[in-house]
Length: 415
Image (cartoon, rainbow, N blue to C red; front, side):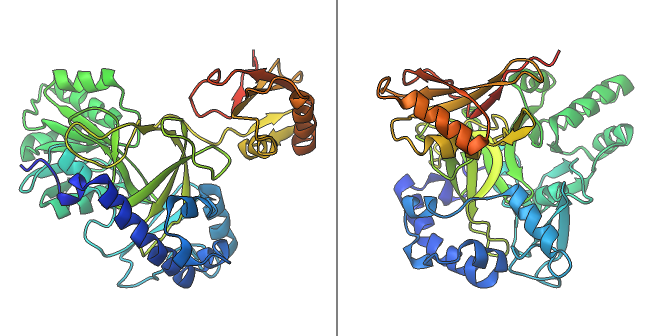
């Protein structure tokens, strides 16, 4: 087994960045020309000008709820809402669905979802049998992993979900090298095998996703001879990031461009600050440009100790959509951003909703070095104008607010 899946993983960061930025104008032009959705979203954008991170950050973010809304509006004539650039037939062998429902196309390229890289990092290698317990119906997870395994040169047993006793029997008979699926289902299988007194000595590694994988569960598997690694992906984008033997965050996939933005906006945050993951994919069949995943994470400094040079993220840190109902009205992270964007003195802000139900109180905590000059009353006026609700303002020193990506904190008592 080689240390790396391919030479892309060890490119100089500047070389990788140059390659991604060189690909951006072509991808933006392709999306505008062949995707009716992006023809509208990127109207007025000159693709040739999108050659830098700053230029990319000026493009609008498309979030999952907007993708769903376009699909619903256009379902009678285009189930993909104008986002896909290929149609039914030989160029699209499968269509999947995720909650909404949102429909996702699968193209014909080898390792379409780019999962082989994560499998290799988890220790899988050509010639092995993999027991795949991700679902094969409706959602793309099973196909994502199978196509990646095939690209790696592995054989797959399509175990799918459920039927725990049969899963144990198949593992005992076929002796796979490892498991791919959710961590909770692997735990159920291992416990069932112990109950049945059926040893599974061949299962020594696992690639896990779709759920949290805490260190306590990782250690539980290790005590039973299974080394588990996690990866992070979505039904829209495929693989986004994967864990390595260093156990220090997740390394970004080579086929995506990642940004971390302040929730409710498209504005990139400084390195290390928690924000929403926004991904631009280089997939030409489904060219999602600045797609807001709705997931929170943060960039880790430096590179992976394994020698992989791509950007690392801390992993999944919660959801970015913190919309909260206050006195009968919804307050969105984007409204907080709209308020604070009017005042360059504001460094960071956090809207805290306190009190008991039916007695809501909003306090906007603002990091600033300017404590005089009437900033607080002007912010109060902006809160009322934007949200139609009254709110207090508390000015705090820079570095006071937690670095957890929260723009709105619901601290009410629901007892």
